[in-house]
Structure formats: structure tokens, C-alpha cells
Image (cartoon, rainbow, N blue to C red; front, side, top):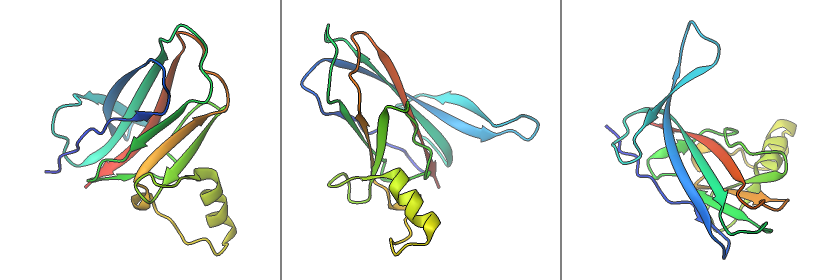
Length: 153
């Protein structure tokens, strides 16, 4: 049985932002469209399967905030499911294969793989961290939810 350790996200801002994390087990259901999600307690051991992290942030600073960057490490015993990170259109998603030292846009990697360029093929298991970069201010009291999925074997 694998154990997934919940790693804290890093919010690169000098202002108050509240964070809530929920982890869901994702199960494919044969007789339904899509997938079913069931909540898993963050502190409980997580066995094999696919899990969705739902990170909700709230600006409690009392003002609109610019230049927000959120970084989230991928748990050591989990594999990031390539392309599963989500965010609104005005937030860019980056991935890191070197534990957060450097980041590349996930869309660039995806485009390079599709075109057959010389960029080495990168699988989800190569990614060790995610980064979301806001191209717009985070409004006062705004709630924002970001998601990504991992596989634990």
C-alpha cells in the first residue's frame, strides 16, 4: 500500500491568502459519462489509484493582488497525470522536472511532442512540481480553484 504525503503549496506573495486542499479518489464508472469522485481525508493513507487535488485560494488581504504565483510539489510516490492541471484562461500552467528549480509551459512541451521536434519526450512521471502564474489581479475576497491529478501505484 502506497502512502501519499500531502505537500504544502507555495504561494509566492507577501500578502494573506487562505488555502484549502481537498483530495478526491477518481473512479471510472462504466455506466456513467466521465469519472466519479469521492473525497479522501487529507491526513489518511492513500492506496493505489488516481487522485485529484483541488486547491482553493481566497484573497483575504482586503485589496486586489497582482503578480500571484502558486507552486505545488508533486508527492514523491505519485506520478503527475500529464495535461490534468487546470486553471482559468488568464492563469498560465507550468511544469518542472527538476523539483521546482525551473519551469516550462505545459502547452509548449505538448506542442513540441505533437510536432515531433527534437525536444525529448516528457512523461508525467518526469514532472515534480506545478506552477500557476496569474496574468491578472486576484480580486479582494475572490475564491479561485486549481486542480490536478496524480496516479499512485
